[in-house]
Image (cartoon, rainbow, N blue to C red):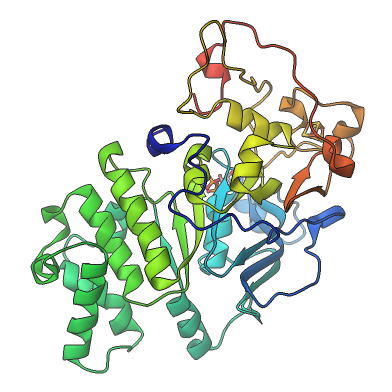
Amino acid sequence: MGVGSEAAGPSGAGSGAGPASAGSVVAPAGAGGAAPAGDRSDELLRIEGLEVHFPIRRGALDVLPGRHRDVVRAVDGIDLTIRRGEVLGLVGESGSGKTTTGRVVVKLTAPTAGRVIFDGRDVTDLRDRAALRDYRQRVQVIFQDPYETLNPKQSIGDFVAEPLDVNGLASSPEDRRRRVLAALDAAGLRPAEDFARRYPHELSGGQRQRVVIAGVLVMGPELVVADEPVSMLDVSIRTELLRLMLDLRVERGLTYLFITHDLALAWVLADRIAVMYLGRIMEIGPAGQVIEDPHNPYTRALVSVSPTTTPPAAGERAQRTILVGETPDAAHIPTGCRFHPRCPLAFDRCRTEEPPLFDVGGGQAAACWLAEGGRSLPVLPPVPATTPPEAVPGA
Ligand SMILES: Nc1ncnc2c1ncn2[C@@H]1O[C@H](COP(=O)(O)OP(=O)(O)OP(=O)(O)O)[C@@H](O)[C@H]1O
Ligand code: SF4
Ligand SMILES: [Mg+2]
């Protein structure tokens, strides 16, 4: 689990980040989990009822009108808010819809339904070129793989300058150069003049991701969607990169949607955590609370298999929740609670009715019938001593 295993621990929550934004959590009650109306002035981003369904093409005849087509429900009705200056960690297993959510926010994927509101303005159907340009300046993305983002034939200076050139933002060649060098310097690539002249093959993996960060900084964004930004990097340089991102948060007042499959990493970095499963938010709340007192069995299972810096005492065995059942498939979402085929606490109602997010207090909410009325989860029966590693998610 890379950085998570290095840095996570009971006291690690929110280190380097500001205080958890208790009270900022959308604590929706009721189907659909719509956020309550209230003071929205400190919200930077609001996602309402977001759905992204991809048609599955099985053959050429699928394009015929009236023909039924199956869909992958990558994102299946989520509501989220991010406050200014906040780090929201979006976590979940592979295929849960994290990247698709991030792509909608940066307008690389069009939603099937729902709204995206940025700084009080509905940007879902933004068409106007000037408005789009303004949005792309204020909302930037860092992807997992710097190798894919960089062009091997483009110098680092030209790569960082590209968004300025495309959007006509530099007032002169000197202004362009000044802004590029400042961005490289802020990303820790010093001396900036030297790095500006280099090409991607002359850099290490960590330096390449810093170049990507410089390309983001040059636009002066407010919101950064960071999609697994360190997962391709060597463990030894992940911490440096994460520290840089957190420093930039303070220095530049950045807000992050931080996407990761690593719950421990989200715990270290994020003020709040939203746990996704098959296109839905299963739990959301202040990071420490979600980890230490999960109210959804899925979150509890993820927590139980995440590394911690405190090993079990002599004679104790770590309590792990083994998730059984089929691997989740967004093209075949189970009825009722979508987690029920794998949930160790599932009961009859779970198979037929989908739970909404229930407010469980302190800005935390969980989509589980057992959380109705703010109740805590029952204790699970002890786990057998021999846990096959393949039965544990993320092991
Ligand atoms: N363009 C697309 N066309 C069809 N299906 C897609 C498309 N993009 C994503 N999907 C599907 O949507 C679901 C969610 O994918 P997504 O990439 O958002 O998951 P993720 O949580 O980011 O996973 P990972 O941790 O592996 O990156 C998956 O089932 C995926 O196969
Ligand atoms: S609603 Fe039922 S199946 Fe879903 S997480 Fe809760 S107990 Fe498990
Ligand atoms: Mg992804």
